Amino acid sequence: MKIEKKNMELIDLKNLLNYSERIKEKDVTFQKLMFFYKMAIKELETKIEIFKEEFKIFYDYDLIDHVNTRIKSPKSIVQKMKKKEYKLTYGNMIENINDIAGVRIICPLQKDIYSIKNLLQSIPGIETLKEKDYITKPKTSGYSAYHIILAVPVMLSSQMIYVKVEVQIRTMAMDFWSSLEHKMKYKPKEEPSKKKAKEWISCAKAINRLDEKMMLLNE
Image (cartoon, rainbow, N blue to C red; front, side, top):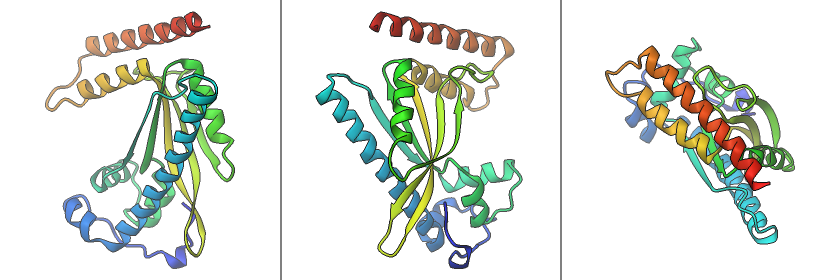
């Protein structure tokens, strides 16, 4: 997010992990920063909704099934910064944490992912900062999706700023696998065995094959 450092108060975040809820409600600097991320999501969500309705009305095609959005919690932000060994300042948070604002777009078919990606990247004013194709090259866990980090312009009363938003684009089948895998992976007090991990990878491959078959049938 492009904010002049002279106008940004860099406050230490060391206590944020233990007092996340209190700081979330009362820390003025944090609230101001979260306002920018929320507005960026609104800007992007509006444009996505226009694409969704356009394809449905003009082309009789449901390009987008649904959209989910979220803002990362203070606790999650701090945990990620500690894991990456960043100094806990707002400046480092803005500069290095790209997924504070998140948008997930769920579509019917694999080919739709690339159509949505191209539409997002064609929006005037939006810049692509980074992208990863986990469809042609899935993660070792079996996870598949397309990730893009976008710089979304937010127009304020006195200036325009760019805010980073992470967009994940998945098919319904990919989302089904990912949601279940996440729940199993982060079950409290339960470490997934190697056998179970292999089974999840096998399921991911089966879902990818299903995606490809559904795309061929649709054509």
